[in-house]
Length: 397
Image (cartoon, rainbow, N blue to C red; front, side, top):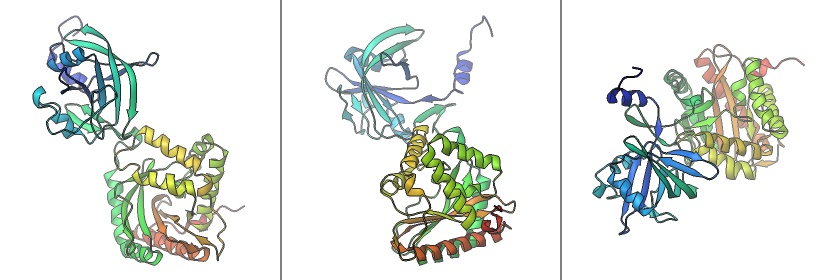
């Protein structure tokens, strides 16, 4: 088609294969009424000075009002705001009907629950075919909800997840759920005995996905089915049971890049899992007040690169809290979290059982609960023809 006219429908279809973020450009008119328009063309332009841009159609009445005001706010919509997006695509006089908003620093509307908002003054407006290329000078910005953004792709709306978890395997999850059916009663017995919560996680790419959970009496379930944890050192060590050495080294390299303390913790957790068949952590301010609450929320609304970096930073901060310790039989330990691998017929760990939310108990009681957890894992292994207890596979010194 070189040198000839490009068919507009073909142009739209081809460009539709490139996903674009969805944003509301908002402002107020001379009477203080909200005006705005949904765009899929918002982009960063310059870091120094800070400039952003978008491309409205030249005949847009909404942009004419925004241009007249000389200021605007960019609202980056979240993945769960498709209905809000569609409401904002109504005729201009009905666009904000029924929608809550609050004024930004420059007086423009900011919607609740958006990913972030960016206040701008209009810098330039340059004709670009049947559109304008508008640049705005950034005056202030705020992240409101660091979740996955709303995308427009091939004529439909969706969310964003990184490539490491684009398509969880339905087959893996289905097989895991089938295995869980054989140990459901055992999970319930252990949860009741420990007065805690028992959850089974399946390994999908580089995440552990919750496929079943049972809580003891009067213990509120904290795990959301389908939620996921990143297999970031020092977490995920049990999934390395039976793994090729190259995979173990790759995991260790990630720990090594995060610093010597996290590397030491990761190595100790893996050694403990190999020697005892389980690993655990007990208490610590960083673990309990920052890391575990963040992991509970992680992956429920969508995994973003920023959220992954945040969790990795928390793992580093909580490194000392996650190190295995020599349990004192009469010592008291609160909030123990224990994990054990379930090996498949090939000797690989593809499932993990976690016992957590255990109230303050003695070290000897934790040892008993860990043994029960390992027996439950072995029961699950029998249902899939799995390998023997990993403690029998410790290499000779």
